[in-house]
Image (cartoon, rainbow, N blue to C red; front, side):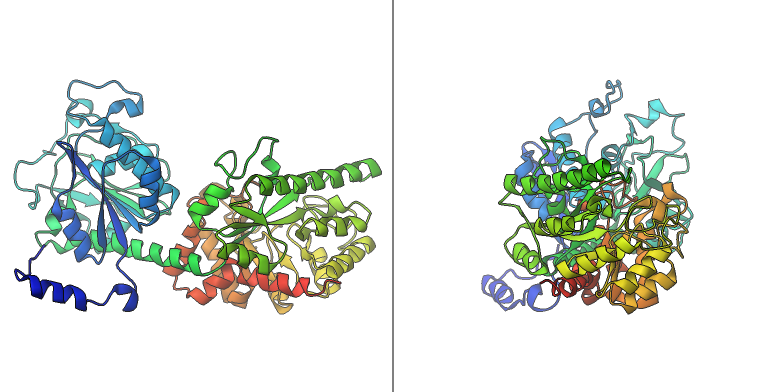
Length: 590
């Protein structure tokens, strides 16, 4: 760190004349650096901070404390986390007994680091790990480490703990081929020179991570998450970067750029309403369930707060069953029970959430710092054969009804049905007319193609697909063809891309957030950004690698920014389009 002003007056003049970043473009992203602990001091080598500053970041040293509330408050304001190096990790965290070669451990620092990293993971911060940070990240994500590579492997062929100064390299590492961050950062070089200060190392790689670098003797030297901006290296690049190594400085520039994108995503979520149009969370409600705490599902208030999501439409899902009078009444009662349970959740959590009936109420609740929960019914089977049930649902706050689920009902044919009606039934047309009259959106997710087109023709107002993706990219009958997507856009409706893995990638177990972005891009390329949104299907088996719960939804925004989307279009995708349709439909209410 250079010193420019031994003169007090000159120093203060420069500070006073400085234009804050907020007035002259985006401010540097805040990068938290995990501290080392020595003789009761929270400390860190200056080279970490120097490398972050040179990369355009603003370093914040996080003190070694284990108060979760205090650390949570710190992490919430960060844009990235740098996990620094240090001593050995206590093997008891891996349910292992210490071997004789284990060196000094500091369990307090271990606990601090693990809490800090877990919070960063919950808030979806970009993370970069160095040396100990590399190993600790692997543990936190479910991998393992060697307590001592010299005694627990076939003896390393190279020296992994150099005696020369840190700024000098002591051995090479191979950058593994393929699409990974290190290959990009090092411009495709397949071998680089690094320093080395460790005797512990990664053993089994954590799930959803790939190895990116390896030493000549096979010891892991780098890894990254398949979808998230999370990566780490075994060596100490900060020492080499501070000595002018541009390759090593490139690691910090890449990391700080990730943090800048995350900061931009946070600001977009602060300025705009974000809505997940379809969650099945009421399916998992037992009587003691409380949305105010993290339990059970993928959508609750803490997860929405971590992911900076403003609103979710929670649906009363009713599986298709028999259609005799008793079964129909049972389906209606079940739907009303699920809706009543969401109202009970509002009473339990009045300070943090409220049921929203209109788009205007969603905006009001966001301004008040509360989450908006809206209601839907998934499967018109719940209507039975009584149109008055539609008014009952509307009075409780239902904003859309999905006409069917997996099976034909008295309203229409399903995409997974037997083509009983060849589209809408006569009763189904009455249902849509009544939904139009009452201002309830018609949802065609799960509907057959003929039902889709019948509903589009029958409805006087735009319709939605609350959780459907593009069949051109994943050939599933639940997805929409390009012609259907064009048709719904022509009538000013909206397609909410679903995050259910089987609708996103035909190889479902490989379905990732990148695949979901491909579906969004496909619809945008086809009809424009005015007709696409996001309906996760969380708690109804919706989840992807890189986006498994409500707190991870902000990763979609980061990916969209990386794709070059501007805020005006991200605003539309994250709720503007859906609220536009809702406003239009609700304008028809008597």
